[in-house]
Length: 184
Image 1 (cartoon, rainbow, N blue to C red):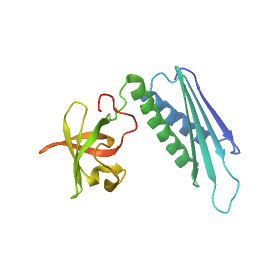
Image 2: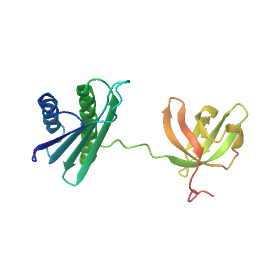
Image 3: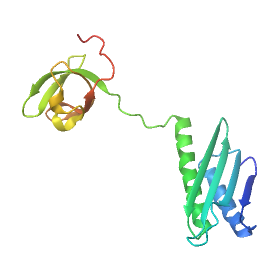
Image 4: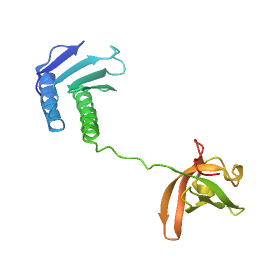
């Protein structure tokens, strides 16, 4: 880290052991993002009830170039070290997401296709024609919304393409949210 770690203990007596644990875990953050500029860790007791055990809260604020990441982890546990571990595990997951997004490695979701229902059969299946003329089979089980008996020939739908051994199939079929250009 380029800027030293800052630790704040609230409603907890000073503890070299807690601070050492935080230092050990904070050093590991550099493995996931080498440009962490600042790390502030706050450990607090969230409530003072002794009948049900303490509830600790650990907040980690990270500063990176052009971004800030905050993790707040609250857990009812007798062991503050468990809460610290869980908070740093959450920080690592957020740092990994940040690095993937910055590199452009984010998962791309499938883009829905649009089409119109062209054939319906009482057995619970039908066909959708895409604007490019391809025809997709769908079954009532592939409908997200509306129900099979609520659609009609000509209904505009959106769907995801699924390759199958017998031809093109549509999955996650739902009524289209936008009017289809060029279909009419």
